[in-house]
Length: 142
Ligand code: RB5
Image (cartoon, rainbow, N blue to C red; front, side):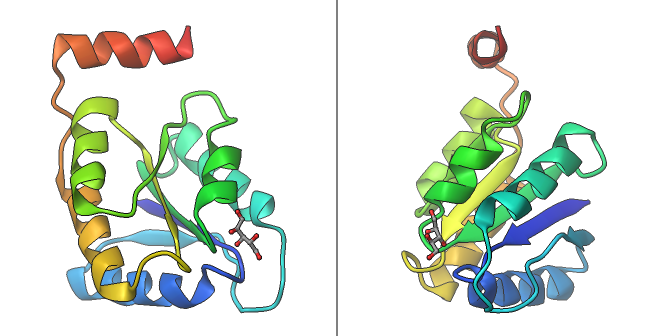
């Protein structure tokens, strides 16, 4: 189950992500926002981060204008590793090395084609499980 959240700036790109997830038959829970009306991104970042933290969802996707505010907020919650990615290499590497559990993107930074490739890389790349990466992730929490 994938938790989805965005603000008004991220709303248009989130519709593209939802269309992609539907096409792939992937399950998601959409925590809003649900329109382009101005809103506060921390509300939606916290909802998604909490769903992942509690294990209700195994991954999350957050989108705001830049991806910055929404990722800063999500990373305040213990156990959340939100990675702001605007390229496919980073999306793949953050899964392999950081076991990132939330992908953040900026709708004003990337176009829909690249964004969907980033989502694909994020969702389809497993954590490497290498001892050094497990150790470093543990060190983030300590
Ligand atoms: C909203 O205008 C914008 O500030 C927000 O989407 C995001 O970019 C914040 O980091």
